Length: 481
Image (tube, rainbow, N blue to C red; front, side):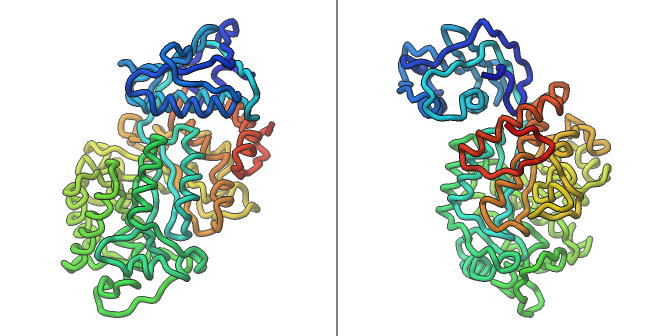
């Protein structure tokens, strides 16, 4: 049995008490306050799997889940004493975070009989409200079952946003009412990098994924990339190219060659139809409009396009997120630029932050999960340099970008682009063990983080991932258990 705080992300405050260990025996039961029942049922399933005991829901249960004020949107208190375990949070999201902490204190082997939880108290809450990762379905499509598996894996580390990159030059992966060729052609055979990733989500499949994620307190953030990265849309509907020419499909990794025509009303009719459809399917507050690498769009046309499109996102009840290039224009304070470059300063992002915008930090040299672990590892890219686990861990989002400090940050996201990925195993191997490092960067206080402690705690996940059937990179930095 480890210590109470031997979990990832490391909690904000921990007071171990070895004299207060609690035994989960055959009489264990859960008492849930009104409103806490769904999360309590998730905990019961985990305890049954770990112990083999029935763990029913009962009014006299000594494992108590309570809703009370004072912990913040996702904060919680966990008290483990000899006679009871108490989980208290202001909202169910906080209870869910506490359950992920408890989950990591349970043994790897299932149905182990009585289980002892280490005694003491945890007071915990996240540093940043937005803690995300991104899965690129456009360059290579992943099925709904594969996405659900990914959701289950990331939820264990208190990740609360999953950004789905749904459209790009090589594929269009979400059904849009009134524009059937987007997926018939853009999601058909031969799409994806190398032609190796056909497929798309129907509106119903996407809605099911949104609901599945919500059950794990993860918000789906859909991205429709524009005005660049639109070749797949223009192959399906050549009139979107603006000059009447037919557009050839692209299966390579090149970027920056496609653009919507900012001077045509047909462009905005198409964009509004897409935004309306995606917003209707997405209950979460965000809609990502891309905006990156629009090299084929003039600066004047780029400004024109954003000035037309940003109000459309707001019209349909969403906050726009865009890659940090969108900060080249004056943004409304509801907009969220997402910084992805490797440089240490960006005038546009700093100006947006000064004007009240919140920023998501995704510097490629610290968070891009598609980067190789080492120069000779596969799969992956290397344009931002190798990204090992220590490099993913050893940085502070509040000091990463000049004039964009703690108060300007909405959070941190770790994108996974899929140009070199061909399977769920590839996705898992590139995600783990680096995402837990970034999750701790995003959740835990900077003063609580320590590389020596983290690598020791991370080492214990080798057997846990193997038991869950999750592939991972056996980084030589980690003394794997």
